[in-house]
Image (cartoon, rainbow, N blue to C red):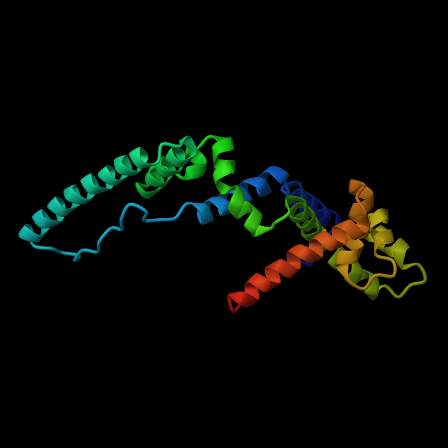
Length: 224
């Protein structure tokens, strides 16, 4: 919730700055990273065994020997699978997984863009997330605090011309107009953004609803 000490002009500037962060490229990268997490599993080449916190001298030597054997085995596994799967896409996948497990870099940092997109395409499709919906939802949420305050202040006005009073308080005329006959902030935001972005208000409302509904279902599934 926006701080009550902020003037309408200050709150508008704050929301405007937040809305500018809503960038399609950011959402595309986030979706790619999420698809990568689902595509590239951990511990393909064997898991690190647990060790006692303070082993003896003999124990330390044993641990070192086991580590040498394990690392050689992991490298051997990589070479084996690279020979086993001669396809270019498969080799890219194996190398990306190995580099990830060794803590060298993530697949998205190593793989050529088109190869990464090809390898994660199935998981991206399973996620069923619309980048456009995410963009619209982000923009609506960015402006929500401004319109919540505006509606709250509008309800407080008891004069014959509340819109004039709101304008004198520092609210924008077009935003004031968007709150007419509205009880909730989201419809007002969507109507206002529709004119600003040249997008149908219903399109914005539906996109916001789809993403919000998906977030609610995910929270419910997690017991939140």
